[in-house]
Image 1 (cartoon, rainbow over the protein chains, first blue to last red):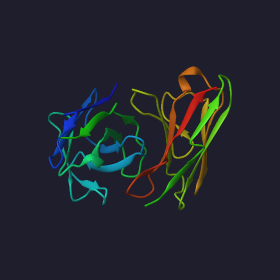
Image 2 (spheres, one colour):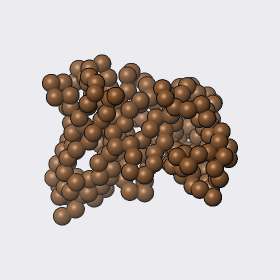
Image 3 (cartoon, helix red, strand yellow):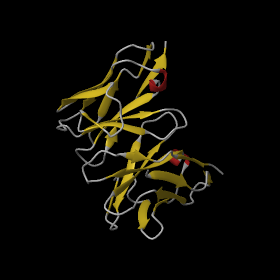
Image 4 (cartoon, rainbow over the protein chains, first blue to last red):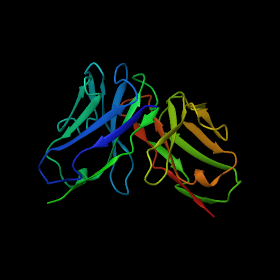
Length: 118
Length: 107
């Protein structure tokens, strides 16, 4: 069965760039939309953006100036970069998969906690 | 952005109880509404899409209804593994937005 696994540093310093990877196992990255979502402690879930396997992207306007998504089909990985982080970026970060642009997610990763602190 | 409001934010129930959670969208979203379950330390589990369709492998004790702005998730007979937090999410309009969650606890 298809599984998603987020990975990356659990601690990032303020003003630096947060980098995370979502590795897809048991299936292909092709023909799907790959989304990043985060949940700060005690707050609601926030959509960060998506990338289609072809490379097309769409970002949340609230983060658009700082976020970048990329895809590596040879490694079956999707990556997230968030620059100039502050404590407000402390959150659990999830990746999720959808088949269509306007579609529900069918699979989620377990999530990875990232803390922004000096 | 479309605001998603869930109620209640938490509830206490017993094994075997029937539970209903509501979700309201700030504007009409047709049936572009999903529900998912999150248990501590586990990956979110997608339950329902298109307001009322069950994802593969999801037991029929879960059901969803509604369209437009008002939606419900019902669990017909709570089991120990169902005690978790439930979220609604709209996928009618970007940015995608989520409800605040409903934590279902054991009474």
